[in-house]
Image 1 (cartoon, one colour):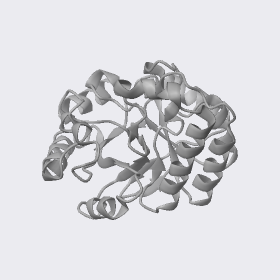
Image 2 (tube, helix red, strand yellow):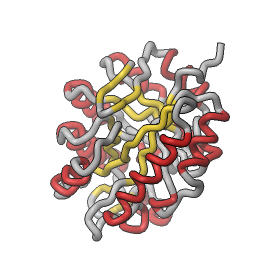
Image 3 (tube, one colour):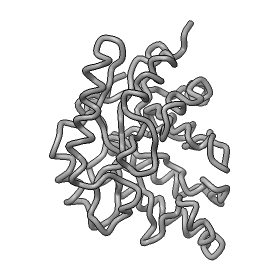
Amino acid sequence: MDMTAALFDSHMHTPLCGHATGTPREYARSALDAGLAGICFTDHMPMPAWYDAPWRMRRDQLAQYVQDVQEAQAEFAGRLDVRLGLEADFHPGTERYVEEVLGAHPWDYVIGSVHYIGAWGFDNPEFVAEYDSRDLAGLYHDYYALAEGAAKSGLFDSIGHLDLPKKFGHRDPDGYAALHALDVIAERGLSLDFNTAGWRKPIAEAYPAPDLTRAAAERGIPFVLGSDAHKPEEVGSRFTDALKQIHDVGGRIVTYAGRVRHG
């Protein structure tokens, strides 16, 4: 049986974010070659000019992003289901801006991700030395409090790469904050981005980790498969391993269309 036949890759980027290569057409072609049923582009959404500007499209590029994805939709119609989404950021104080952007187009799927604790971009390799001066338990407490804020905001469909601070090998020393965040995510009816990019990072482990995958499944939280591709050859990366990790704990895989969950 072809395990990929009904699968979507629902986390991928485009060159508009400033740190990805390959056109939407090339990502779609790669998905078709991998035997996927569909994809959802989720490029880094515009944010206020002062926030993380080098790593996302500008507000005046949003229409271009939508047009690029729509062109891929048209070209691959009948062969690949191409959907339009965003990876949005949760950063306290920017919620109204995010809400405005989310109201600007009919998105299929919106991931809510936390990339900053205060002014620190903790997943940026340039700033990894900051971990040495942080208390890890406190760091994870602060991070998961933000993840809970994202879940409670009502802005997003899923929470992105749940245990992202482990990226460079700094693991959560206790895990309690993560479980509390999962309780909130379950209460709010959100899904989790099952993000295979972690296998390509120093931690060499998908987001979420196997124990958190189990804890999420026990709470009835479904998973949305995503490679977090920043180049076409990463589309569908290690989805067979992802399926095993999810199925081993009785987890459920879903997709989104028109911001409605399916599956």
